Length: 236
Length: 248
Image 1 (tube, one colour):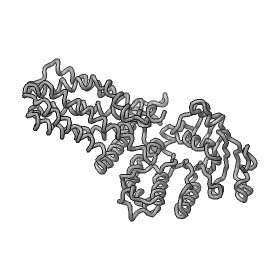
Image 2 (cartoon, chains in turn orange, cyan):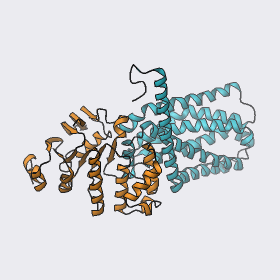
Image 3 (tube, helix red, strand yellow):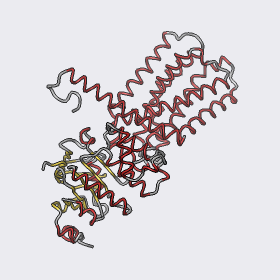
Image 4 (tube, one colour):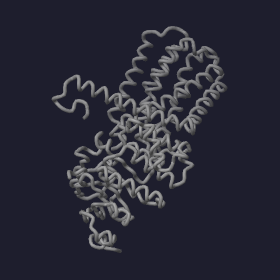
């Protein structure tokens, strides 16, 4: 499999503080890479660099052979960060229609309606998002991220504070995305959910890559194993 | 493939790619503008603030100075454009601040939307909102200052459109630059007013000339060129620097 993402010797500084140190990681096309690490390890920084949202000082990053900010890379990208990325004063339908137009989707109306059905928001499609519950907002955010069938999904702690219905939906969407050949990079603290989907694992600590490799059965049976073996603090 | 990316491309192919790129940028910009206007007409956050500010200032000045007809012709343009410039700051402050809740700016920047489309879309939305405030202000100005501003309507409309687009573009560029500053409401006017001076002088000169009910003289028409050059320069700057401003 060719590499969808290639990070080589990437350094990222916030002032004098190195948030990423000499980070090198290839992610092959069609794989699902779970980015693990404790708070402040540098996971979000790395994902923002991959999504073209944050500049870096040294090294090189290629997404499908292009710069992360290139038109080609952004056309294939679905990004879900800490925020849900939808407008409170627009309805669910208006939000999805706007993002479909921005992505220049062909059949905007039909695509939006099918996603509203899929995430269970068709009945409240005209309601402003500010009146939505947390779960409804999260489902709308998922629809926004997956709307244009992206070839690369970058998800920052996507399982955090999801209800069981949304977790099931996200897992299903990720499985489908993998089946159609999409590459997935996700950061998470929910080891069990992430490892169940992941084909590869990267462990990051203090901005340094501590481990990168395929996800093994051992990891599935004992999700804390990686931390114990490869971090300075071990399982503490 | 971006226009002009390889040496083997024929001029026709390059021209076609440029045209497609421009069309896509414009289409995306219109989507952004429509979205911003939909939110603004729903919340009326900046419309209420800018409209109320403009009307109150015009009313206060009319009572404070009780100007005679001749004086109004001389100061009318200046008064109006200063009010529009200050009202504009209230509109621009909301432009990019609207993208902060829920990290919508990240969602936009990681989408296929180009940074230049985003910036031009923001300028378009501010342009429409500011024109609305100007229309209401002109009506109030006509009533309280007893000024027949509609004598040369098309020329006046052209001046308003050109000057407002210049203000809106500059506001969008610096609105993007200051969006993450804690004191953005303070910083934005401090930055944009000095840069607006040539545009405001041109708009004031032309508006005063049109209020005098006489055809514009050749030296006054030069100010029209200043407006056009200002618009072209800042629109080009917005398109060229959008990526740097918004991402870096």
